[in-house]
Image (cartoon, rainbow, N blue to C red; front, top):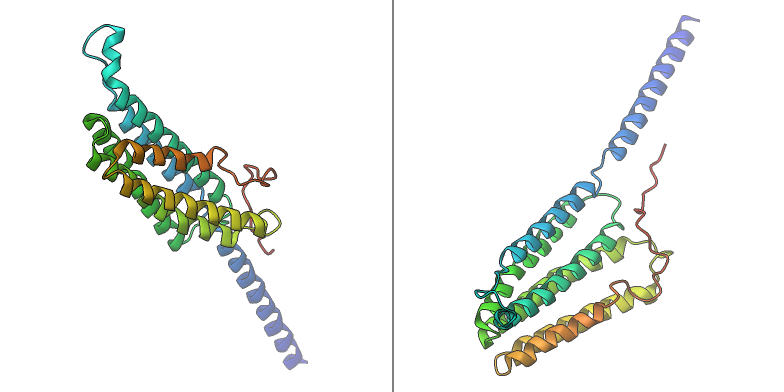
Length: 233
């Protein structure tokens, strides 16, 4: 009788330990870092980049409408760069929602992507000050190439974890083809700008037309609700 009682007590202790261990594992799963901090940090970086570009806008020297005429390179380069950053942010916003939690790989891919985007204000200012000289336009297009090269791994990583119910294979193929076409256009613009800088800048603008609608066709079901991973009880 004593032996049976000891056995039952040991079994109860084992069951209690197992339940506590399961509860601890569930707690650790729930404590995995989400992408909220990563998104907030990225939004702050994008805001700083846009602020830097805005601070580079200088008023005309003369208080006349004619004084605005020499500022057209600044206005045009700022407009294109602002639209480009808006595209990058919007796609970043849509893709980040597919990650249920942050990983070291995702964080470093994001850091590289943000670093490349941070070069946009420098190249924009150089193009504006030199009025579309060949070397600045070449660097400007090269920065767009670097941003695109950094964006592609981010996009592919996001699509690899996205539920097939939300992002079909057709949409995945379209997104990859569009990224490749945009990258090719930026590279072409970079090379053409050495001989014809205005044409090279025009090709950069044409590449951005691929993203007049940032979301691929057929993604009407995309919402701002994050994709959540089921947490075992």
